[in-house]
Amino acid sequence: MSHHILEIDRLRHVYPDGTEALREVSIRIVHGESVAVIGANGAGKSTLLAHLNGHLLPTSGTVRVGHLPVGRDTLAEIRRTVGMVFHDPDDQLFMPTVYEDVAFGPMNLGLSGEDLERCVKDALRQVDALHLAGKPPYHLSAGEKRRVAIATVLSMSPDILVMDEPGNGLDPYARRQLINLLKDFKHSKIVTSHDLDLVLDLCERTVVLSGGEVRADGPTREIFQDEALLKECRLEKPLSMQGCPICGP
Amino acid sequence: MASISAALLDLKRLDQLASGTTFLHRLDARAKVLATLVFIVCVVSFDRYQISPLIPFLIFPAFLIAVGELPTRYLLGKVALVAPFAIAVGICNPYFDRQLLLQLGALRVTGGWLSFASIVLRTGLTVGAVFTLTALTGFPAICRALQRLGMPRPFALQLMFLYRYLFVLAEEGGRAAKARELRCFGRKGSGLKSYASLLGHLLLRTWQRAERMHMSMLARGFSGTFPEQVKARLRFADVAFLSIWVFLCIALRLSNVTHSVGALFTGLLP
Image (cartoon, rainbow over all chains, first blue to last red):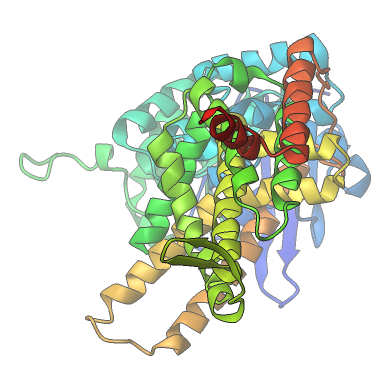
């Protein structure tokens, strides 16, 4: 079975303080799909993402990546397969230089010498950041940081890319650059975002979470046209679908 | 908090200087670290009343600044920042130590003034050398060099993380302090109490960030130890640089060049 398939089956998660963050969540994502997980603050998006590479383990239910269930004994393989790009790039870029940061994952996987160098350079080239290799991460702009954070994950050749708010804090140019970059990736992608226009551009399928439950799962455009559903889940139509406020729809 | 932001920008400049391409920048960090250590040990090992033998040691930072094409004024500014500490340490010496050591006409120089000058000069030399080393090498490279020279690995990693997140923490702290200030309207606010709470929040935020960082490290296969990088060997230029400076520092320590030069000139005079 391909590693690119992700199956979440009746996933439930209860935090130690008793908060039930996810209730019976079931999603199946197949090879090459680009799926957005959207929802209001506190809907359970981050908790869901944390289950995809084993940072959190289910209270009940299962998460499977390909043929592997996510569990303590499969963490190493799961984490190579599912690349996680964090919400804040400063959490992800902790090494003294961009090069070392991108090399961190492959080195942990045992790469060295020319193989390592090729892998790091390929990843940086993919995000158009090869020229930043020698720079310390705190000298980068927000857009550069985001691209480098993606490279740190790409260098491990993941099958599935998981991104938490990838467009957050980017200026319009950097945001567009990121969207174009992500469109070109052939990986299965799971994206959480409050930027619904970015979702519209990037993901053909959308899952709406509300109160820890899946409220809707379907083609992005259809979901964004369901105004009642969006309102109920404390969401709004993306601006590009709202029509012009002066000339009307 | 503006001063913190300015200090951060200054640190970033130090980093940018380290990305230079001169002969000194390209030397192995270990050679530069060891040479600086020997320099510092030699400088601080002088007797407290000695000043003249310290002066030739200026050649070390001067050489590094000139050949490394570093901005002299900027580095002098950095040293000046530390000067008040040295002055605070030595300022009582003239008061306690009134033993007359030198009389130049009406000018009476006591032991206290000499030791005070010696402290300030030694601080200038050692701090200047360390800033110059950082500007030529970069803080992370110095940490790695120290680790390869025997410093415990966890300590080196702590230092590197400290340096990396210093920028993030200071920016967060700066924002929080600015937010506090904007709602104080020029008054004290709740004074120290509000700062205590602000610091508490910063600590908690740092804690949360550390957890997220650890998550991101685990997500990239971290298993408790940092993978070793390929270790570069010392080249001829590194060994030559180190040997020359170690030899020169020890020679300057063992012989008072200033005194010899002075004696030479006074000997020539009729």
